Length: 264
Image (cartoon, rainbow, N blue to C red; front, side):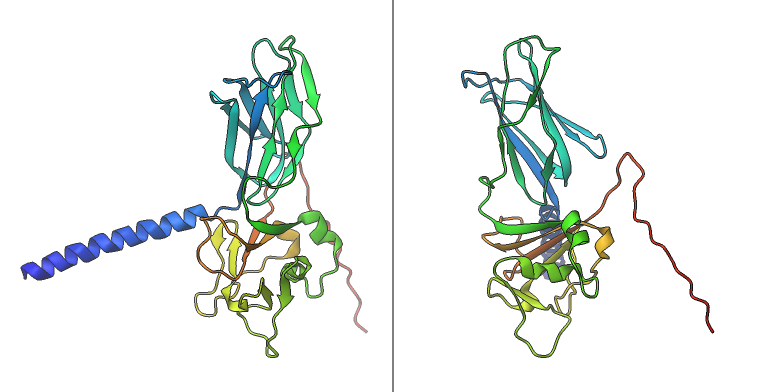
């Protein structure tokens, strides 16, 4: 009886640890991005304690932080969208960057140089934004909503655009299966991880995709082909991350005209 109780206790602890590990792994697979960079003066000297304000252009949601002692800042877990970054500190003119698109899992680097002057003056920054991914080694490509809307899709299947990515080929199987229709970087078609708004979107039996949203619902989808970050660990045959559209501060939508035909 004592041995059984000890076994139950150890099993319960193991179950709790397993559940916590599972929740942590799901939490790591986010469909967000981050903006990071540095703030310096015209001579290149770092400026600690500068106020950084990151603003979502569509929703007007503001994220605020400060540069550290090395003049660096980071704003993680940002929903994909278009953002501006402003920096201000007493004794320098306020600097505001032009709107920049933040994609899924992207680390957008925005370095800002402040000019000496009145704080009430604002300077529009055109340079200092790095579009080349230099933070993470992950290889992949994003397809945004404008591309999805302008490209012909036979059957309205957005995942067909995956074949535009280098290293993605149609599956060699003659008989189509629900496990997938393409191979990523030579991997099996049933070894692709599908994420929808950061959650796992794989069928537990066939490992294929569960929900493939209508193209009008998708804001962006990104395919990772190799050298994944530690947050991805479910499958090794490619990562397909889909993010649906979110709201903005203005009314918008798609107009669909229905034409009725009189039956003879």
